[in-house]
Length: 101
Image (cartoon, rainbow, N blue to C red; front, top):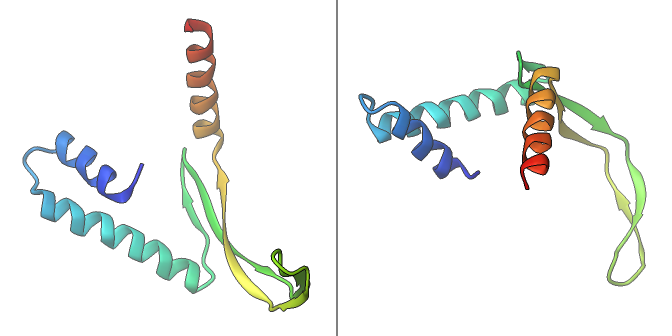
């Protein structure tokens, strides 16, 4: 699902809210989440999962095209950990689809 598809889905469920307002809300949520991760804060959405920014140490990598060694600097990377409820719902849905097919 893309961001525009998310906006369309929400708009179809909230007919009394304009699509433009929904777009602003979605953009604001993503912006707040990005800002929180930038400040090294943890984001926890009950029943869905959590986001955290982890530090990846500097390392030596290889250029896949040439095989040449390259230095990869230390960096922060966002990580998502799925929540128990979401994991169970996804697995239940997969299980139902595989038994119906």
